[in-house]
Length: 243
Image 1: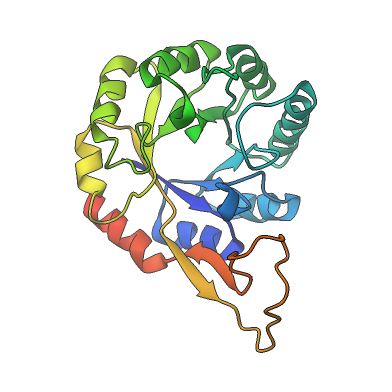
Image 2: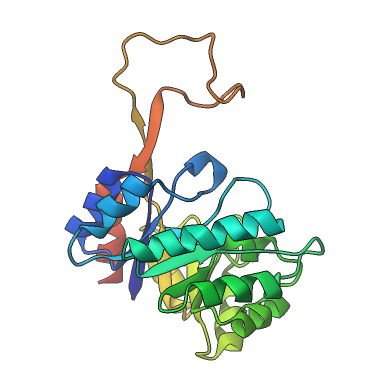
């Protein structure tokens, strides 16, 4: 079973290397659901031996309806990922009606020639997952990351099984969201090609002085004094379940 760790930090990349995860999906901004990571983090991850690297291409948080200018920016980020030696890139684009934006997606797939392309969980925001799968296949993507249109892959298990059957080997189905030691075997039994997980933990800041009057993003409730990172013990437990 191919395994993919969603990594936001240098420490997470190191954990993936130590534990034997197949591939990392490198991202920034976990509270946004993942955006394009920094140049320095991409280069750091690429220097790690024995680890395949996919880079998130998402210029902002929010929806997956992109303008021409944003699509051009994504193409530029794909070119940079290639220059850094990434094995793959990860993106997803939708139309206002909740369909896969085939024209723009195919354009970016062509830009990524020579790298593997994953259509990410924008897929789960599509209006019809089975119709969306056929659209993603037509664009030339290598795989799709999906929770079966639900908050977690376990909740979307029935749709995941249907997607695997419909894909029939034409495209890889990678299950993600809420994947952990308790359900790794269950999801594997659905016939998916890969499991995607973050094994998240919140690492408390070492800051002793804390200003409670300031939110850097201007949004109350954002944890200013913790860092979203990866729990190595949970990664090892998932891998142990997969045997």
